[in-house]
Image (tube, rainbow, N blue to C red; front, side, top):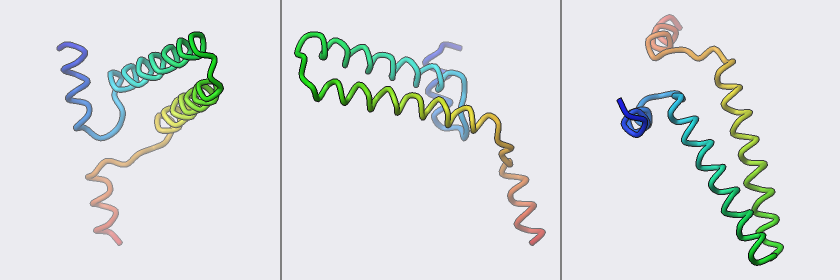
Length: 86
């Protein structure tokens, strides 16, 4: 199965998949490269701030993905059993 097919299918499934994480990193890298080019070509201060904001957002997303991997998430079946028991 191709990368894009796996990515499209992972959008409709709960949780994160390796394809979705790779696409997220590629998107942020492309955004930062674009902002670096705009900084280089225009030297407008707004692009410096946008670059910093985008970089910090990327770091935050990486942290959040790591926290999701370390958390014990319950499946739908486990959640329905726990609500029936209460």
